[in-house]
Image 1 (cartoon, helix red, strand yellow):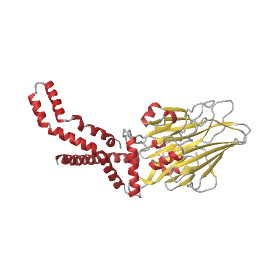
Image 2 (image 1 turned 90 degrees about the vertical axis):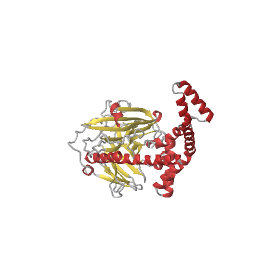
Image 3 (image 1 turned 135 degrees about the horizontal axis):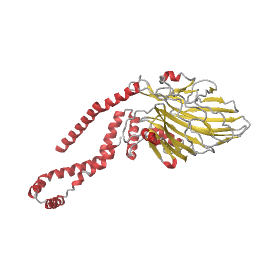
Image 4 (image 1 turned 60 degrees about the horizontal axis):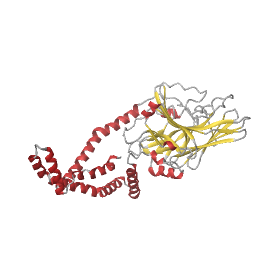
Length: 467
């Protein structure tokens, strides 16, 4: 009975500690975070930089497009609504995503997560994931082509952040209806961009360039995700927020905002089976190129005015487009919530390389991921997360019960030896060597292992340590 009372007391005290911590630390932290989101105003610029190939098609260097001067910082950013009105737009309308694509620049820069809200109130505003460059918190994706730098001939004019594209036809982008954008540089090159989206969070961007000139042109397809301003992170040491990617032989790269600020740039030349992007705790934007493509990727940090900027980008190999021919490049963009079954589905459906690592499962992922998938299965079965958590807790306790029971028995044996141990200490208080010897004889005679009560607890630590 005493052991049971102690166990119940430990549970009650643990619950009190959690409640007190949430009240005095968790809620104030959330309030500070919300206040910062409401009051933060940051200067931003139009672009951070498009990866530009070196002469001869070398690795990318993430410098501004040749001939395009960096935009001067605005005195103060526009509101998000005002920034959206700076360009004509193509609406995005899917069951999970709302927003628009800017015809100026052809960027995917306005994404709202329709099924997720800022608070538990279903009438509260939806989560804003991507925003245009003129807004207080720019976060956007861009696809396109760049011409090889250097050489005797002047590079052809390429569409950039100021380019105004034309939509073929009309209507919103939906899972059943792609959007086609076109642009001509008046130098013989006609660009055509076809954007499609599924019913979840995946965009497919097909870029084509038709060469109507008299000379061949050398172009490199690229894609980037850019974020202006350092977002507030939760700061959990076992949860990554920042730049992320699975870069082929380079493996998983998780780079914090502070780390990339210190390093300025990290390059990953000639990698395949890659994906890369920027992740928050619950949401992410990631570039998903063809897993069989070889590309030059990089993480970059910069600064425009007083605003810090972060970028992940990749540059594909050179395409020499002959007169009368057409070059084609296809890329994908994941922009949405990090739902396990959705991300696992993309990983298997597209043959990606460990795309499930977009979700940080912590150090003990081999424990936490199966636990979550089991809890998610229960949730889908019963439709109640509270019941799912309760059932998972019961299952974990049942699995760990043999260890816990062994620990309780070992501790109980040690408690029964306490009077004998006190006598030995009193009798040998001036002879520590003899005391240790008689203690070991006592343990051996009573068949007690002093560490037996601790080892089962150590085995259980990974279950309770990882989120």
